[in-house]
Image (cartoon, rainbow, N blue to C red; front, top):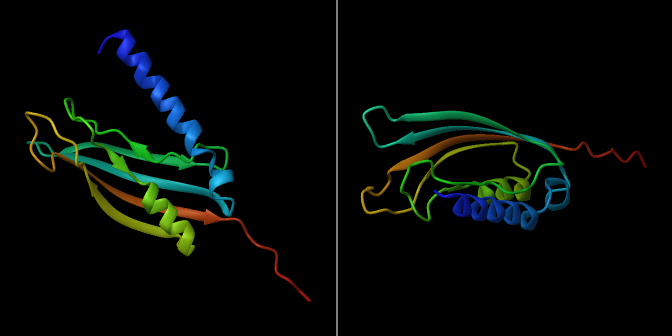
Amino acid sequence: MNRHDYAAKMELKKQNNISAGLVSERFPAVSGMVIHMTYYRKAHIPLLMVRTVNVFPTSYAYFKMDCMIKGCKGGGFDLTPVVSGMVKTHRKESKGTIVCRGDADVLEAGHASVEYAAVITYKKTPKNNS
């Protein structure tokens, strides 16, 4: 990837973050969340990476990660529907697997996946004593 491509990719990432808004704006009831992710690939050694992301009210509400497999185009892992669904139903925990749907000439379908465990903490609402 040359400098121009990298700069364009970073600008797109910046615009995506800005468009998503902040967690405090999009999900005002959320005080924080932790997302544990384990990345897998179809290979002799399938474990690619283990990652924990701490999300704060001041974080961008952008939950899409690119596929880490070189040559994958249009793939990635979008946790936005997971987070949105959890907040909508006020769920505190969710676990699941997302499979990359990207493609490339040399990659087979399902070439990468992420197992996630998300935990959301909500702001305490004051109890009405009347």
